[in-house]
Length: 199
Length: 199
DNA sequence: GTCTATAGGCAGATAGAC
DNA sequence: GTCTATCTGCCTATAGAC
Image (cartoon, rainbow over all chains, first blue to last red; front, side, top):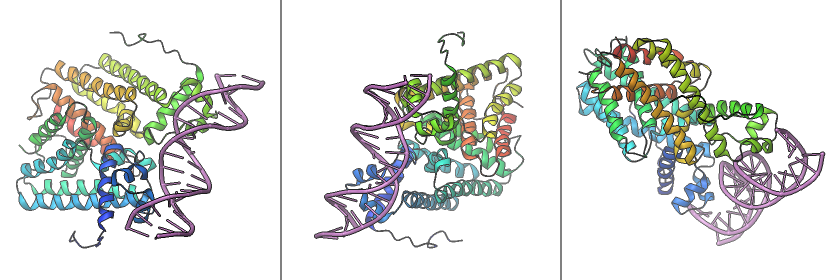
């Protein structure tokens, strides 16, 4: 399944700018604490202009997450293409998230998952889809490896190790955000786990 | 430091009921998606009555988290008193969170951490304090054990293992909530980790 | 302690001019 | 495509009667 041209989504310059700012704010404040007025202020537009591009907040939310999911898929494909050792792949994968954290953000789908109960249905579906993407990909990466997850006694399957990895990454981002710079603690936790999985 | 009577906080019957409902709703919707009107409806009160007990939402939020933190401290103390093996302690600790998840909720401080940027300062401080409580306690539990964390090659210190555990628990709750019942996946991820830490 | 009533602000959203 | 103007509804919070 080619990930590229399934849905063209050729966006206008303004629509793209809106998505950029919305993504950034969602990552920092969650879904409910971001308003059209916030976006308008940062973009030097009026709220009506944003409503023209994204009629409802649900439309905007869905567009942001869908684009995020697609960009993430490309990054994962690049990792798979450019590395072959499990350890190297996992390290580069973790750096995807470390980059977001270094920027003062949190995984978009991680924050949105916390707001799950209040999310419009299409947005919630995309968030769930993102998590499924991650566990599927990690599972196949682990299964490709000859002695995948050999270091974790209690885990029977690659999928269980994948679940564990994703949970730890999301949780480490959640608990290690900004005030003091805890980026190093985030990296240390994940290094610890990866060293055990791929030693 | 006795955890009991530092601050009396003898609450009226109504104040306690308000805290109960607020805690429950915060755990399901996050801080910003819970309103005085929501609470009033569930409690069969008016919003004015809630404002009498907790003048501002920041007051309410802080009271909820402070109480949560205190209850959690008691539970941890009980675990320490009633078990001695590292493995048994960690298992009971994880079950604290599994109980919340089984109830359809998420760790109160986990959800609130996602809203961190929009939290009133006193609430944010309590949330951070909760996480510090957990890593401090886990660190001491691990350090007490003779060969603590021996199964994790990459982790030099008990504190690093503690960070890893807390991250995994919070992340596993975040990514394994309700729609399908993923309580078993939550438990599997943590069992996997504990088996490696305390084998 | 709880109520009614209400203030003042901000939310998401729409109509219609340009 | 972007604007001004506006609607409706909900938010936190307060005043004052009971």
